[in-house]
Length: 386
Image 1 (cartoon, rainbow, N blue to C red):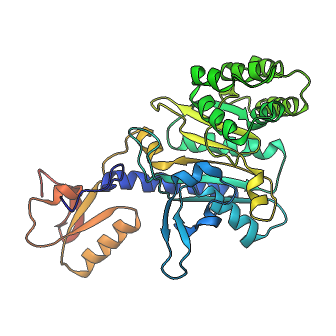
Image 2: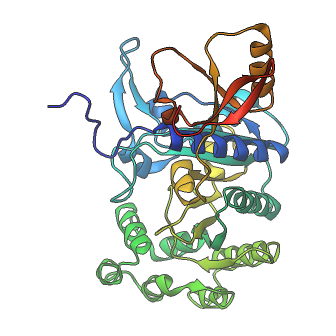
Image 3: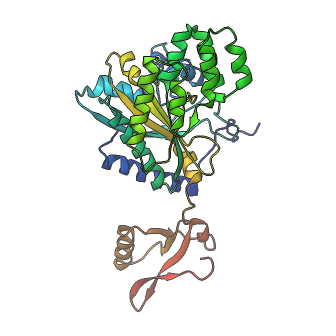
């Protein structure tokens, strides 16, 4: 076996892509900071019970597990950073008012989410704690749209949903937990044949409502269709009212509705949303409200936010210019050192020409060089490869 081969769906990030990723990471985190979102850096691994608290079975299956040699307890490599940030808000910051937090770091999945997906996404996101009103959901959706704009990727559609609709149907139909989980999966896949089979024994009118749910997507007319699933159901009316109010606060964004979109994490408790863009087969970003996670950590706090894979976003972003650098002699007088320092202070990359490597500097991006002209150091274009 070749020892340098990486595991399947795990890959290196080479200089050009790494430079693009880092520039985008800095730009997004800087934008989040301008909106008051403070950066946190949770650890890569935690004790399993803490890592999975409130996240449900879905995250358990996606999490790599190992035994801590110091304590003998089971630990997990994080598959999602959001629960970690919720723990920080609940137990470390302990703020009484609103807390806005953001993050960026690698997560690890036991299986890739798709045929071409990596098992090590670079997850970036923003979370808002302490406000239960629709204003918080609108803020994070606008921040997500702004993040995509910064990357040069415009959202073509932002689907809004609400897990309260499905949960109302589940409660009304008296669905057992196992059947509820199976329905989650087939609704997400919009697998109508399996959906029909699964709801065969579900009493009416819940059975017909569940069968109609995959068709509840599109414009504002969808909300009236949802209300007709179970007329007079208070929970569904409340969910639809919240979606209608949220959409009215986002008139400049391409908002639509999808009430069968239950993707993401089972910890969502209310509004959920997914952003789509040209050139990407699925959602580029997911988010929603997850108030129950704070309760699982022992301190109930309203919470909403979004996350996305920075690697996927970077692939969709317009290609950046290749790195350009200036080649400087490895040794020189004080004037050379001052010239190099001034160039670097101005943001230029200056590479010292170590001896014995003539003809290779083009590989490092050098397209200019420092040369001494009339007693002064000046930058000139390189003719051919240095």
